[in-house]
Figure (cartoon, helix red, strand yellow):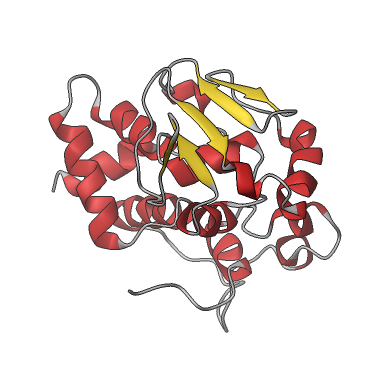
Length: 208
């Protein structure tokens, strides 16, 4: 399976904002974006005109990389959002937020989405009592997500949960830290996402 193997800090610099790919490191003075906030490459500091298409493409690339999707996966998610009732952009954000790896990250069990994806793949979580090891699994309202009993002693999970107050848990999720368990109170809405995004640019890009 294809995967991005270069420095993830370059992605933050390319997009011109912190995307928190390295968890705790992004909050320290070691953050590469804080040191060099311009785009990577020989011409990173040069200024030039940006076309409408370039803006749309950059927005799609940013969102795709934040959630850790390949091009085909992202396009499939967009098609599902387009088929669903309601506003396509809002549907897209909701579908991305409902991914199990994203939910694990938003609950504080993982410092970043890549770590959350690894934990899910390795069978650390159960949904409604059943083991789920598919990062793209879409949670539903009233689902119960919990750490598998034999994984609750994992020191990394406990360490991540200690920092959950710094990031906060979204309103649509109800976390029980002591039991390493959470309930999905409702489906996420557009205003629940913390990522600065302009989803309408993505809709316009795929509508061409």
